[in-house]
Image 1 (cartoon, rainbow, N blue to C red):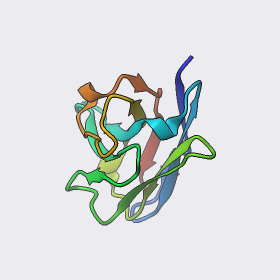
Image 2 (spheres, helix red, strand yellow):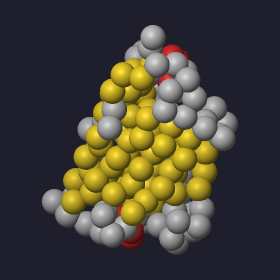
Image 3 (cartoon, one colour):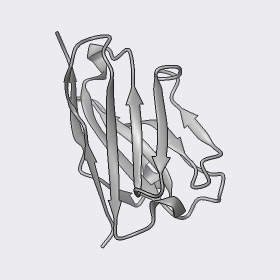
Length: 127
């Protein structure tokens, strides 16, 4: 059974940093493109970053460029989202997603392109 489980969320002060993990089980994450998404209260889910399965391609939403980083450790079957300089409006449920249908260099910030999803982890940015 394909499963993704996010962890690492919590409360962080404005300007702070947080690293989220996305652990995969039941499949080899290295064969999948990965996407990180977030959904703030009352808003639609938005794509934040993605990485192709060969790790050669990454895409970022304009709002997180220079502050967020996506990475993966295929040996641990885990992906990561490093977040810096967090702002209160970035309070949201952060979810990871994976899909095997992209080409080696492909990934997407569109949620409709991913078939496997984690349940998400809450990130709250507040003083």
